Amino acid sequence: MRIILYLSIFLINGVVLSQNIEELINQGDFYAEKEFNNKKALELYLQAEKIAPNNHDILWRISRAFVDIAERTKKGTRKNL
Image (tube, rainbow, N blue to C red):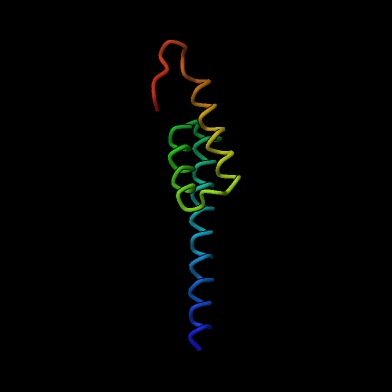
């Protein structure tokens, strides 16, 4: 009986984390693609990465956000993010 309880808790926790990651990615995508606010998108992607550090979709979005930020930064004004 305890095994079923533990498995249920584990599965529910996994679904909740998955939904949180998906929400963070969707919000980040909104800021990147609709608002052109890549810094805000990067913040959200980094939050998602803390939950799922080996998720290649998140890592790709983080790298894309860094490139987009760098491309929009004028030469001579680049500074640490």
